[in-house]
Length: 158
Image 1 (cartoon, rainbow, N blue to C red):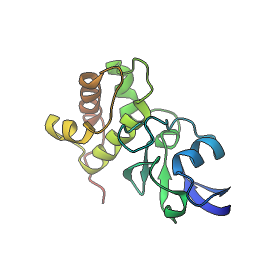
Image 2: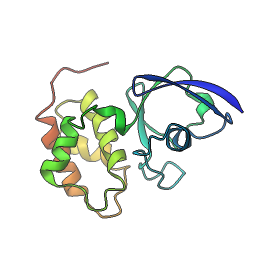
Image 3: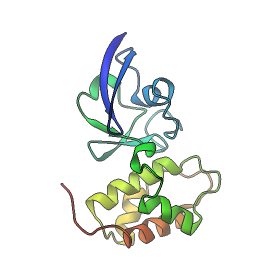
Image 4: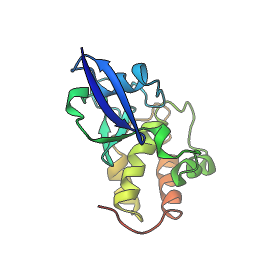
């Protein structure tokens, strides 16, 4: 066991875990941030997607000892009031069915909109293709990303 100081959702968090513990389990089991889901455990489905320094990351594959000083953002940290343009668009388009994959879908889409505020449908498709949806709501997911892109500022960030 080792103590790690993590920066999660704008707060410093201290955890005492084995150094090879996946970030997913640190978030869920130790920090009680359960919005990030376990899907496949091998980085193929995207349910566990969080941001590490603004980039999407499959947290099931990232050992906590590799996080270092990176800033981690989970679905809980995307918007304090749940009013991020993607969260609003998800409601407007009525995306979720079972909802299991939705936090990973939203986190992947949020990284896209941060890097490309007005993506084309092709860019949306290419970005979102790695996130699986058990219910097959892909059309609504793409539509919601497009809707959200019309509601976000157009300034690109590094």
